[in-house]
View 1 (spheres, rainbow, N blue to C red):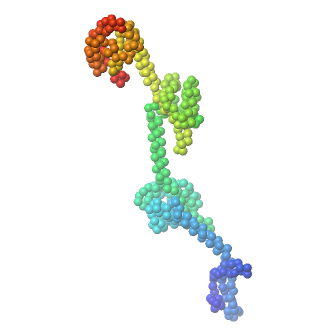
View 2 (view 1 turned 60 degrees about the vertical axis):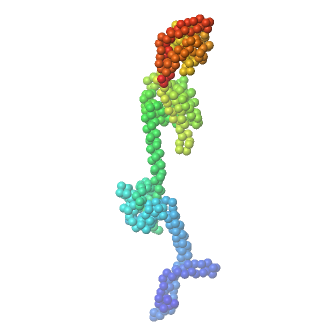
View 3 (view 1 turned 180 degrees about the vertical axis):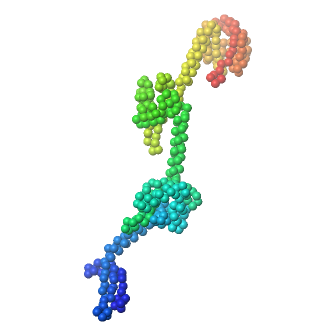
Length: 419
């Protein structure tokens, strides 16, 4: 009716039904038709079938709606900017993480408003590159929340394009790695402390991998054996630094540790670069990664060369003293703190007629001293047990056969290794 009165209509959308019941969406232009005198004689309708176009548009809208919901509900901070660097997207995670609502962020210049001064240039470069089509993955930078909390963000900057492929902005998908960074920093600190502890320890420490190749060689090991860390790393420990006679036993200890069976106080001899021998008491400990998988062995040694020398010298002195006591041309006896005989030399045996086996473990005063001298001898021995020694104390002893022997006694306090 409008067209028949001269009012034409463009882009009027309506539905047509085919003979077979199929629906078509048509975009119609209704144009007035006139005769030679200009009189309206009818209407000409020119239609365009937009059925498929509408389906495509509906699908595009559905995808756009899905993408919008995905962005807004994603468990990662997502923002978008236009070609001027102004915020066009700001999802719920970005809001909760940084404390700025979508309303506060939209339209703001991202770099100037939300990036700290020291990172403005680098973030700007990443976004500018994305606006030219060069995308960036895993770019790390800090952002500060509204309350001033620092957050470490790992960013993927993706170019955003229009329907004709033209660049219309950038989408940034971030990952909050603040906690990961804290854990990593703590692990690095612990690893650094452990590395310094190993290197500065006053004990030789080495490490080997699953193939027995040296992975650790601390300063003490280098100073003691004369091989620098550079000379040892990557070399086979057993073949290069263990003497042939000890290779099998050391190899067995390492293999045990590589199967999870650790060894403590394993004694072995090491030969330095200059031919000096060292006796080392070794603890072989299994080394594992974060998942508990065995990655090698750490050996912590104790140089007991000097200790062994001291022990050998002490043993020699003790042996000499024992022989001296036993072969002395004077009767010598010893008692413990309970007055029981602990020493009884050959001269005491021959003089008194009691063998060492008969005397040791017996109470000296009760078993070998006559009644009249028990009290005085007991006092001398008790004084010596308190550290007060006595010289030239005279008393009689009777032999096994009743013969009296007059003895001149020196009672000397006996002390243990700690005094």
